[in-house]
Length: 254
Image (cartoon, rainbow, N blue to C red):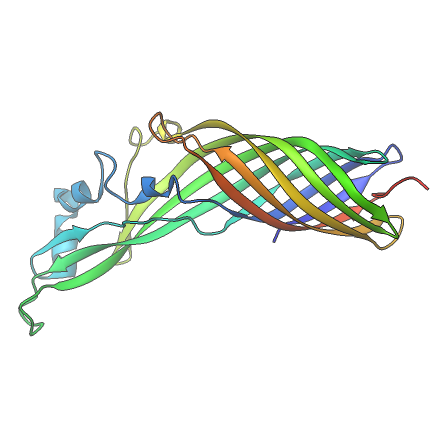
């Protein structure tokens, strides 16, 4: 749940720091499933530099038989900054948020273990991880539906600019990590990623404790393009649920 600490001066300029939660759709999560690049889990398993490690770990003949089918992101941590200016009807604002996303799935290795008392091989799931960073810039206006008795209910409407970047993709075998490279090996700036656009709407409720402090709870729905590569830049719906501590005058002038 996001948390914002906000300061406001006499001109009703609102400044804030945001910490929050972000739910991404799974449209681009398949990028991390291990078999979409030329350097993948199959080339890792056939790499002679790792052969001894794998042979010692599995002990018997082995092969990859299944990769993740329906990958999805975990809820991401969202941090950022907020600036806005209130008038009698709402607030004009701009905010920038940074998000760390993770994917954790499993691929399956079949091991021809003669001691498993079965005609079938032993199937062992092994973890595969993805790490991604996103930054979002929101610019919009929050309309006051209700503003009385120290309570404000608002509807934020905003345009959004997105910037996404694959940070890392790797598997773990016997507690050792093996990287899956999507760009030029050793050059992070060649990883998939790019800029997209979108728009959002939300619902917020603010309770004013005194002239300086208020508590806000809210929700954002964001329909935006996540641009990872030329053939993978889908539009989709993403969600944020948050709480915000406001410092400064946040309701109508008395």
